[in-house]
Image 1: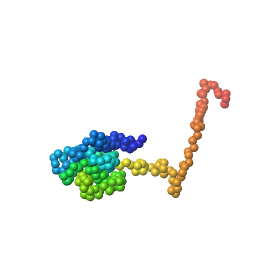
Image 2 (image 1 turned 45 degrees about the vertical axis):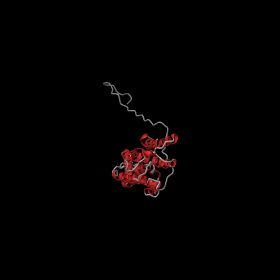
Image 3 (image 1 turned 180 degrees about the vertical axis):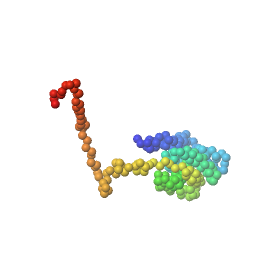
Image 4 (image 1 turned 120 degrees about the vertical axis):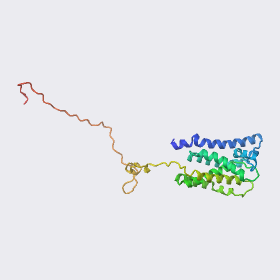
Length: 253
């Protein structure tokens, strides 16, 4: 398993987003199982007791459809945040969590506001605008993916449906844009490919070796001849003439 795949499936990236979503489902299960209703713990704007909803409201949902509609984007966007922005992920998530709820408390209608959609809008806006501000192709591509998947959410920051907390959506959207501007100087580390490195030698590139001088593709490269014969051994003899003892003649001459 590559380093990037191992990181993606680590507790640093996938476990915490899963835990957040599981808590949302756990709260809904408890309400259904024991016939309880936690809606009173939602955000009640301009009321002091409504401030507790800043912490509790993202985990409370009115129906199974409401819960499902928030769970999928929450998991996807939080995972993207934790994978691409590891140095600032907790700041964005925790501060965004609190500030989005506080802004909803300030501008919301006098009604109970529940659900994690404000956090979803905060994450979507942050990932989108942060990718644009960064001018890095990985993050810009991520921004376009977010727009493609959740661009239609933009309509719900306006009061088009009285049953929807558009104030919570708008609060999250504003916070996400502000965070993208604040953290615009936190780029990710660009991975350099082999051809981008200074010591790159195209003649040694195994891929480029499949092309001849005219640019034609060579499907199979000629194999270098290899033999199993042992290396040849050369033996050299050096002959040195033995000196004769005094007065004796060499009879071989």
